[in-house]
Image 1: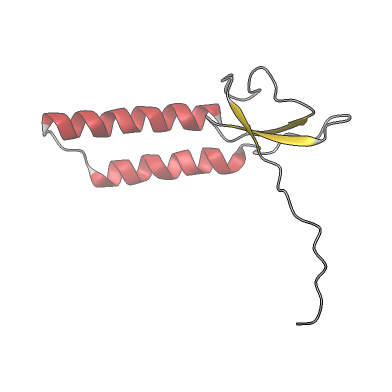
Image 2 (image 1 turned 135 degrees about the vertical axis):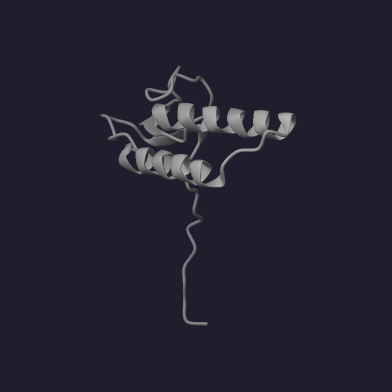
Length: 99
């Protein structure tokens, strides 16, 4: 996932530079690079295996990797960034009955 983010950042920088300089950029090159980035992202694990006793899901704000544990890790194991948010889905205990 880290490789995909780095490639995406470089592509975004090239697009910004092309826009600001008026030099333009070849659309097929952009599409090709986006396809490569997508391929890297699809091959990367998004959810890390649940460890012993992990009860909550934590998603990295930078790369989206989900880790499990009682508390958010200090750093993301994929990209090394320190920001996470709770990714648990809270669902109320509601009985469903025939309408």
